Length: 280
Length: 284
Image 1: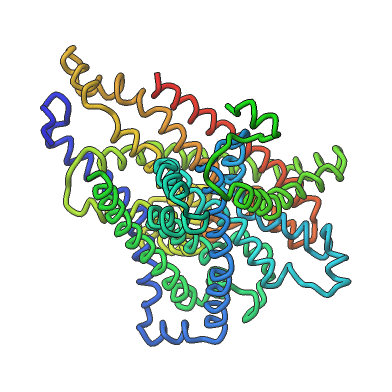
Image 2: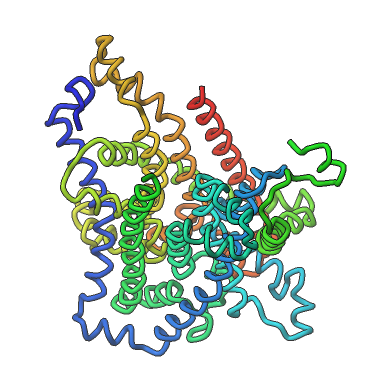
């Protein structure tokens, strides 16, 4: 912080820029967050508790947890496999593979749901065959899982690829030359190096899996108590003018977001610590 | 480069002592193909089966054109707002010290972590004519909720972290030397910013804008509550897809989705090109 006067702004300019930035963030980010909790508790804690402790709300919470428990591990396995192949080996077409992994980021959530309806829906490509064999994917849990996996596809890989690229492959090569097999190398050498990055990727993946709205809305069919996830339940309650109920369920999702943000800050701090330690 | 012997053995990748390439590469490719590539290909397959005439009739109907105009227009407007304020936030976070900076930095990522439907109902509660902010704007004749302005507010919320997180690292890496040199040569602080700093962070700012724009075009959850959803007026393209699906108009939904996806891929290519260009610049 020994910038000379010629390479920084005077105090007044600094203060007004900081004030402008904070005002913008307060208006656009902080106020909506406060509004969620304030609206949820508007009629007291009792009304809030009743709204959460409602059979449909509980079914939505259970379904959301189930979807996350299925789709997050699938993306962990894929994310680690893709990052290992991409960062430990050289092969042609690598950058194309990275671009394709990022593809779900640039597709509208609604389109992400639509593609599965076109594949597995009643009028879809595989619809007649599925109906014949009595397999239900669209308007059922498998469809919600598929749409969620599609949406969260890049999260873990995106976090790991730059990290593992930076770490190189010297450690792994040393382990292998000392006689470790592939699993031992991964388990004892790679995993300890990437655990914080992996955890951060998993947190983001989980937040998105639990909070996804557009894609899930298209494939779920909105059957109360059966295929309604928490975000969909929020929408239904809101459209029925049950604002306390809608904001009560929404506040649980907002809490999840806050936990994710706090964990992210803690991990970033651990990361720095980790990198510092590695340098000594 | 592959060695001669590895080429003779037919290896298409460089040999390595590390194991697991076949397993991890095969798994990645299979999963990618099953979950992403085949489902996405379905849309183009279905579009191709429609015939050009039918495709244009539903994909470029008056209602669809109005929806594209609204989606792309509001996303561009929100992207511009975010380019200005995102740069400001990134600048303040990188350059200045103030109490609570850690918390502010964490808060910037809120739109990444908060489910879009939650953001949507919260913003509607704030900007509805009787809402916390709306009640002060309404007497002034400014209507935000249920107008295109409300859509822009929602997309500003969604897009902000893309700009901040794109600009932040570049701003932090920018050497103090160039600013010192500029000052030594007699430039004012403002000249240094416009002539030295801004060109250096320009590509990152453009990338952030493009990412926020691409996200905004496809955004659904945060918008549908605040937009009012009037066909031809406040009906965004993703909502039109959902409406078509609810009426079992699969061709219409597919055609609109195809148009939007082609537009998104064009944006993605542009982003990649921008990133390559800015890397080339940094390396030079």
